[in-house]
Every structure is written in structure tokens, then in C-alpha cells.
Length: 255
Ligand SMILES: [Zn+2]
Image 1 (cartoon, rainbow, N blue to C red):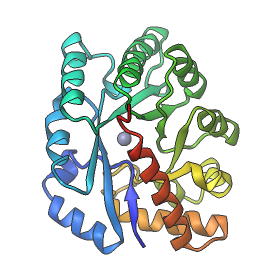
Image 2 (image 1 turned 135 degrees about the horizontal axis):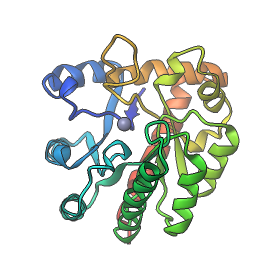
Image 3 (image 1 turned 90 degrees about the horizontal axis):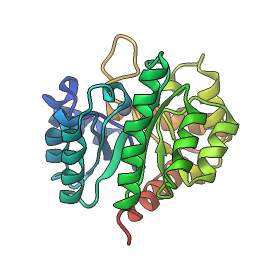
Image 4 (image 1 turned 180 degrees about the vertical axis):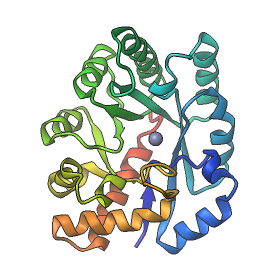
């Protein structure tokens, strides 16, 4: 059984120093491919360096948590790096209305998000979207920017209606570590009921676990939990989610 972790921050200091062990544990669990997103300009170089590994695909972008500090130079550097890495996705980008409380903070996040959506559309790249309590605003930005390249809405925990709105715009839904929490009802419902052609698996390593460092090896547990919720074999879920990732990566930069 082969699996992909479609969202792991391998350039995060919690993982970067122990990557040989992280990769070995992942491989032992069947997790053989990794999509590694950046979060801000200061980690572009570390993320870009990982793209030299054949099993790693990267995304470059400015996370909404860092939108407030983003300056023109960050956007220029982002575009330069994306041109240098023609197979890179754009991410992690999006809106976090849990973090941004004031209207001004939210407005700033929207400006930074839409700048990157326009860039991704121009360069024909899918995006990796971070959404917290902002699904409607994200859909609005996608429409405003006439963005049609698709991508992944990661760590999904919204309603089935929200998932359908994203899927209608060509997005895959990232099913992740929330599934390991029996109390995460919306995430479990999404994993159980969304069409198999629209889901991908992820950990969001090193985050999401209380009192432990999350690593890509846990995709195996997430696949097992999702397969159980759907009443299918983990092997069948893995085969379908791998096809979904293959399709997403094949579309990058296809002009
Ligand atoms: Zn992330």
C-alpha cells in the first residue's frame, strides 16, 4: 500500500533536524510521497531545498498567519522562486478568521490571499488552502480572482455543503489528523461521505496532535480511520487517493 502525505511541514524546525528518521518511519508505514508547503519567505529556501528529493513536491506561499507582516519583497521573492520551481504549487495560502479578529486584519489576509491566487492563476499552479472559519470568504476570493487551477483545501473540518462548493471549483478535500480525534464530528463526516475521487490524505506535521510531534507516518492511521468510516479496505482507499494526487500533480504547469 502506497500513500502520500499531501500536507507536511518538513521544513519546520521540529522535523528538519531529523528528516532521515522521519522519512524512514514514513516509508515503513507506506508513506512514500510528500507535499511540503512553505508558510513565509523565511522558509522558502528550506522548502525549495527539499524539492531536490524525488519523493518531495513543494508548495511556496505566504500563510494567512503571516499576511500582516508580508511586504512587496515577499511577493517578488515568491514569484521568482515559483519561476525557478515550475512544478511547485502555491501554498500554504488562505484565510484564518479564527486568528484574524478585526476587520482590518481580515482585509489584509484577503489582499495577500488574492495576490497569490492571481499569481497562481497566471503561472498555472494549483494552490494549497488553509481555511479556518472563512469558507464563504475563500470562495468569494476564488471567484473574484477567476481562479480555476484547483488544488487542496487542507485539514478540512467544514460542512458537506462547504466541501461541495470547493469541489465544484475543482478542489480536492484534505482529510487529516482531525480524524484521529473521535470528537471531530464534521471531519469524520466529511471523510465518511465525500466522493472518493475528491479526497486526499494529510497529517499537517508537525502540528495537530496534543503533546506529540506529528509525522507523515501517521497518514497510515488516517487512511485506516477513513477506510473504516467508509466501510472499505484501506488498500482501496489508498489506491483512489493516490490516483487523486497523481491527477493533481499532473496538472501543474500544463499550459
Ligand atoms: Zn499547514
